[in-house]
Length: 68
Image 1: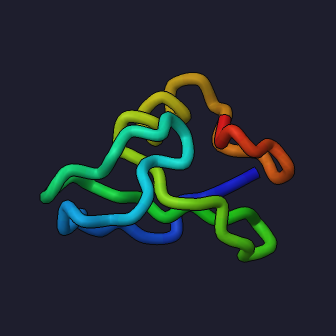
Image 2 (image 1 turned 45 degrees about the horizontal axis):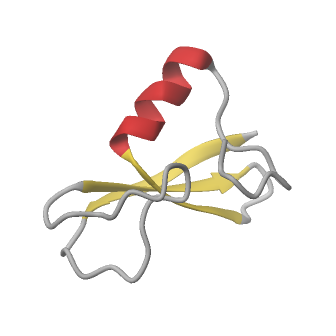
């Protein structure tokens, strides 16, 4: 399982997008750092992906490269 580690606003020049849907982070959008239970980073995710995980109960699982 995974959990939200921190949130921050994007500056608009991030080199990569959301690890869940590959959408680019626009300036001012919320970036959410997610990590696995053992503290290993799962990546940065958009608020939309986080909201969907809260509804369906499926945060990123370790070893699943597509972030879903």
